Image (cartoon, rainbow over all chains, first blue to last red; front, side, top):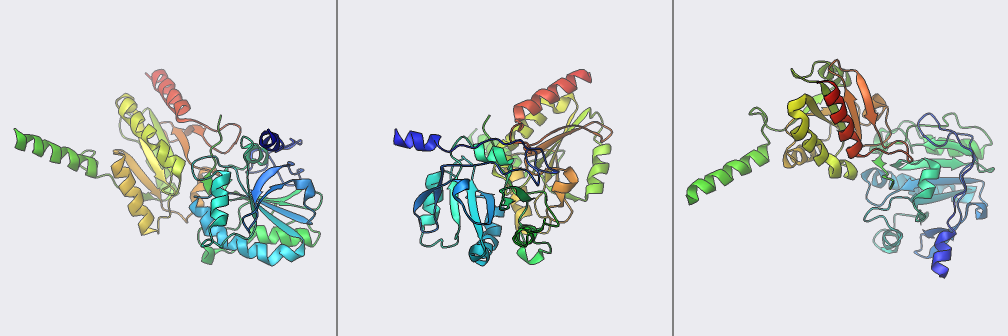
Length: 205
Length: 174
């Protein structure tokens, strides 16, 4: 019963939102959809739960991920570096898996973080196990999809990690990092939305 | 009798591996966006409708649903449906292209199979989509008449919807 209540506690409150240039649900400036009781696994493998209002950092970076996507794997090092670089600067990175297909359950997320041979993930990694409602609320249709939330939890940037997610050596525009820097400096990012591309997220009907 | 059966089996296996269409093996044809658009505007004779399926070897749902495309070709090819697969794999990645061709042969994709000869990732902007699979219907003049995408989490397409639309449009074109 307690488990049922816990899973029911993962609530996503719909705030008025408008489609962006690419995102069909949200645009820059929108209030970020709330989340509460989101089941997650900390980098040390401990199970935890996440509630947006409990996060006190100035900036929250929500990145929709999946366990099997080659594009996610390609940006994994970049996300780790970013997490390490900004963790003492008031930036909290939260990975969220909203996929429910084989290999993408909360247990799979935990298995991955428990694996001592896979010390690659240094951010908390959650699973959207409430009917993919968080992914829908954020309009995330591919992994990776990034959302930078400012201190007021408004969306300052949404889109791709950078302009070449598959080939890091060819990156010339660091959209996500630049957006974080801008928000930390109290400014609006120069680029507030890009097209997130990667592995499609199928949503159940 | 046994040797005849063996020969038939070998012949059938060879067809499955090569995936022939008019004697040509199943192969990926690299085309720029502009060349691809020209190809759509000059479809094979008798084409009433062209269906384009955008996919990639890195896309599991694309590969899972690819048989729908093969089935549509089988079912509606004789009614004027021109089927085209459009790979958004990296055209400079020989491994990815080899994997794509292997997949196409295995699935007996006996139709036009194109890989976009543009900078990797540019296909999404050219097609104005965020996610694949995505399916597009074009008239014989190369004009897009309908698209099915995964881009809206609250309104993602199914291949059943595509097939229904294809059937309706072909019936209307009779």
